[in-house]
Length: 324
Ligand SMILES: Nc1ncnc2c1ncn2[C@@H]1O[C@H](COP(=O)(O)OP(=O)(O)OP(=O)(O)O)[C@@H](O)[C@H]1O
Ligand SMILES: [Mg+2]
Image (spheres, helix red, strand yellow):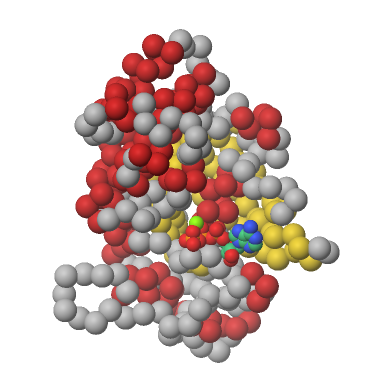
């Protein structure tokens, strides 16, 4: 299958005076039409930076970054903010981590739709309203007309998240990036939102990148899973393979700390990830790793292929059948 989005060798560094600190390293992935990639990892692993970089949204005075990003066979000019405006929303849309910050508090929901659509479609206000109300209904908003005329502060968090999805998919983008679309929502609303994203994906054959630190969210929706740790994808494979036989000790640790309905105590991954300034090119999980052996502290985070579509960045012998 031809990939819709390809990210090749994404590297992002934080600039501070004369120094730079690596925040994301050698991240590569691709997604086919209608497919979902789940990116999982704990706080600070570089998930949001990766999403923002794809859309060219990282400020150049703070971040240095490089990659080849190909959308529908064409290289994205992610450094050119003006050129990127033509792609954002229409070809590739972002659902942000915090719905409240994505809305302008002094603009009604109606104005948000009008501004989004006026920039890309030659529709009059009635056409915009009809399309927006239809989309809000698809998002199971019961009183779309009232919501359309409301201000963001009059809507609940779950409702704003639905409106944000509606604003993102109304342009029928080829790629939808959902960065923690369910954080701060209660459990029943979380699953409703995930279901809606999945329904939209099926309806419009959208390719979806969904980011979460919650394995249960990713497990239900992803075709492929990428596990991030300290700026690296440490394991990537088809979802079933990662879920049934996680290989990287960090992935395995994440799974063990996943809440279930049993009464067993959850295990935790002890220790803390390194901050950007403490990082180096050696295995950054080694200090927390239960499988740490000789050589781990000197292991550069190289990718080892376990099979054609499964790789890990770990030197523990039982995981590495062949080197990439
Ligand atoms: N503006 C900034 N200035 C300095 N460091 C930053 C800035 N934004 C992010 N970072 C650092 O970059 C790293 C990656 O951040 P990022 O926001 O991508 O993490 P994340 O995986 O999305 O985490 P979370 O799950 O908390 O959203 C973190 O160590 C973070 O502290
Ligand atoms: Mg984030």
